[in-house]
Image (cartoon, rainbow, N blue to C red):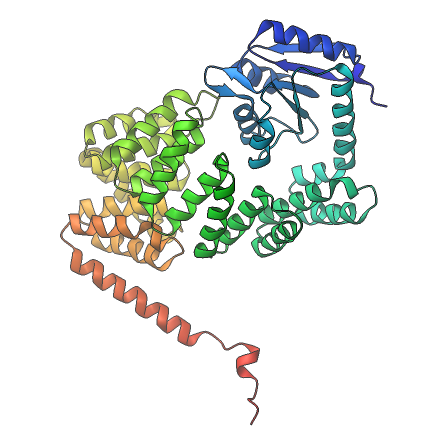
Length: 459
């Protein structure tokens, strides 16, 4: 039997009467410490500074916020340990349809009105589950993936693990993805689908296929997941990411436009929308989205250097170099000095475009590192654009060739072609295309034959 007198409760609800009612129910269970949070920000502050054992959170928190968004933010910033119980409280009878679609789910939910006995039954069940997975949670937190997978396999085979079969398989698939084994993760998700067509499992297959760069198959899976669950907004994000990888930027932006209107306070989605709009050539949408991110994502540390660089980038795309320069020079020197190389490269590249007098010396100073270092696609695009603008064609061609030969070739192709056309180098771009294609053919011809191919053929 669980001793709830030793558990710290946090009740999150924007209505005073509802908070009092939830406190009374918790005290009926024996709870001694029951704290309140009246809104989204208050909840985050309390959880960050004094993590509770059990959270009872209303689904509708006012000001356009929801308990689901709060849960996602807590997971995003790693403020909610796996051992903490997060119980969603809702008056919506249709909430079951919502929670069946999302990937980040609460530990359980309960529909108002409810009795203390009903809450006790739910909490006892969750505590038993948390205890069952306790050693796995520790291994996962330490990124000990081999041990975590072994523990999950042991639990899956145990008699005590029978009630948690799908949860164990889901955790296995997520750990496999986190460890980089997307092929095994795909197989695990497909095994789940053989028993039950969970939308999150089909999305998991799509995510694993995306990691393997099997984009057409990933697109088919995610379209199927979305068709049956229109409120599965996480799946829409994944679809947009896959579309961008396929070079279908207009479709990616369309998908994100639709779900962003339904979830106006989801700033991770707004960042994704800005990226899709940038690739699609819609600089105004990108500017608006990034401005909303910087103004509205108020979690401490939420707005990163990359966010401000993305805003500056959107100004550059819109031809507003003055605003772009304003964003860049607004960053403190001490902050810029602490940037990693990729951030410094994008900062110098964008400044060289906005204000050549200020940016060219910094950009030129980084040139040796820009040649020698493997950089992400977004940074390479910034470097390519700046190199073209300052007349360093060798540097621009080097990064362009790397992008066209890499896994994000389809994603970046349109931007590359447009920038070369803007600088009157269409023929050079076509020549680079041919060089990349020839190198790929030559590489495939030189690839060692497999054991099957080397085996003598039967007469």
